[in-house]
Length: 152
Image 1: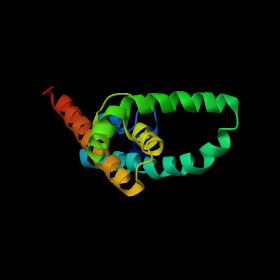
Image 2: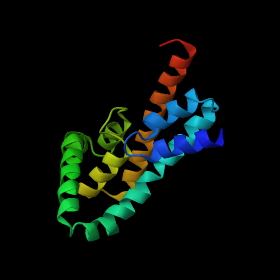
Image 3: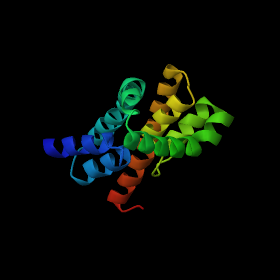
Image 4: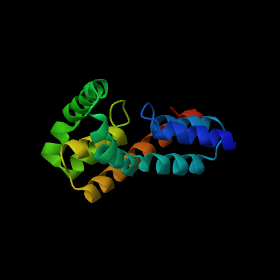
């Protein structure tokens, strides 16, 4: 059980799945449905401050290397293109919607990169990311619960 919780946490902090994968993993492996939601949600929320630290300090240092710079620019373009319309038109609410969508390419990683690229204020952006993550987790949790109960 502890190992399954740890794996769910790793899925929730992974840019390849986030809580969109962590919650179903935990629930399908017998973790309490409320514990699965809470642990995966909190793990996913912790990405924002870690990513902001990375973008503020480590990223600037790593941009000196051609390979990293090329990869970082690719990711930045994808995040900026995906979030541009929502954030420019709706601001705070657009960031919530962008992070909330439970599809690949959206989520806290893309939301944090968009926050950095659009130079949004940190506290409102953190709140928007957190609300978006919560709503996304709620959707994934509900669909997983419905699937487990045979309703979906």
